[in-house]
Length: 236
Ligand code: DC
Image 1 (tube, protein in one colour):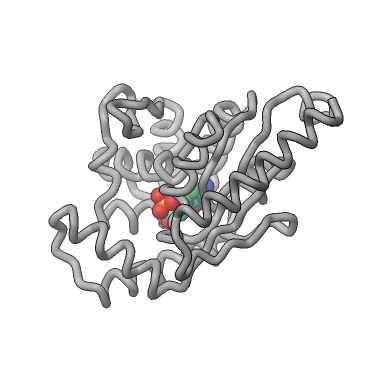
Image 2: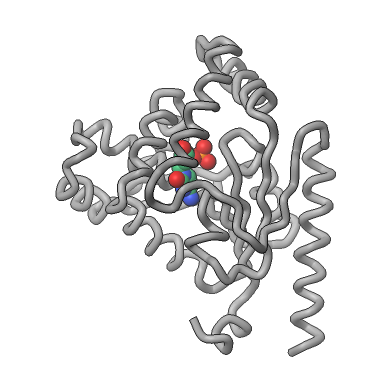
């Protein structure tokens, strides 16, 4: 991308980090505060996983995976104040959030063919800027020139505890120990995969969400983005 086109488009905010660090909550609320578009890239990988499960595709079958991704249209819509994910028009927002789909998604996201298709799609969705994208590789791979990059993390115990409470509230039969173990297993899979592993971009601002409120995290993030917006105005 040329320097010219980068200054013409709006600001891209990348929020990366491990599962359960609170990315979705802060990314969504930050986008609302800023009036930016919000893109949950994890939901895109989850949607592919759900469709793979339904179609009973074997993970090594690259041709079948590629065909599925090609025929799949993922869209985000806002409905009654919440974000819904549609797979070829079907609302899959709840179906993609089960523990089973979480684990399958982590495996699916190791597949290059899936990453390539979604990378292209994420760049297309974010290219106009004024957008907050959350995921694992936004600042390092998808938008390496993003103006603002955050890496949000917390200890596996804290992230597991949060996920446990979320699942419990939904009536899922889970235990705290198992949920923490699943968080650790997913971290390992996300960090060790060959293609676009979870890692902090060199120029990202690390934020540890252990013991600080969503509000405090949001205030820090908003300040950084507002400063960037101001810098742009001044230099325009
Ligand atoms: O953020 P999440 O828990 O909804 O993400 C689900 C899975 O998708 C997670 O195991 C890692 C993967 N993922 C990815 O590989 N790259 C992204 N940009 C976003 C998610």
